Length: 76
Image (tube, rainbow, N blue to C red; front, top):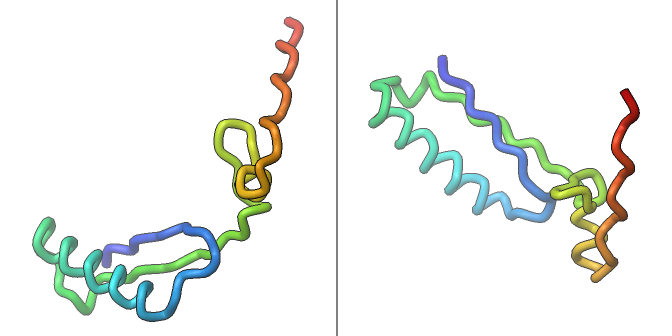
């Protein structure tokens, strides 16, 4: 039973999630020969203030905030 986990920002519509679930299921069936009924897709919606890339929260990127300062190297 393949389980596909998708993490994405909040705000997608049910129709968008349905379409993605269908596309992922079809790709899994084609790729590994799984039956459609055996493919699970789990969506986890994440708020932009709970996701960072390159040391910067996505909520800050959307607000135009400057990037976070670089951390000092750790001492040995």
